[in-house]
Length: 257
Image (cartoon, rainbow, N blue to C red; front, side, top):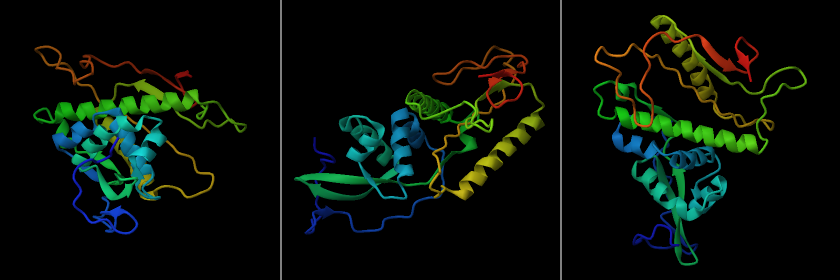
């Protein structure tokens, strides 16, 4: 299958390179997402996986669709449409192209180092609110799929090591707290993420890839005229107090798993 079959008017140099010489625009440190088009592009676990692969490889150089497919263990032909959607949304870009056996082959790179959903898109009057929740749900599916694959392959371990420490952490709790405590908890978690973001990726030989997925939200009382509509693919929020129950594996109170 011909990749990027659009007409190419650029001259080809002796090495067979097309559009491959420039440095291109600078990569954003963080992209703030607030438009529907970008949110729709993010609302698919496979597109998120493609974006993750490109972001992880940003330090070593752009990748072809073939290399992305190999990293994801997916058929190359399955990725073209998703790559185009990410490119159209400006989340990835073509870093260069070259002719390979008469076929124009593109190499892709991410347009940003990280993404942040703008808080405004979650307001009750936001036209992109459902799109924002769809992007979040896609991220949950992506993490679930990745975790299952790594766990089944024996690449993650939630047991204790020789010192008694746990390498992983799993907590799922519901508590009833004062609004100001929720805000303080959110700030504490954000501080940890900001610290990690500032540190960047470790170059240590024994460094490991870590996935940190956090979902924190407060559920308010149901409206007087009945439960509020649920986001696409989700459940309507429940009314009434939330009991302090849950499961965890960090050695604290609760059901250890």
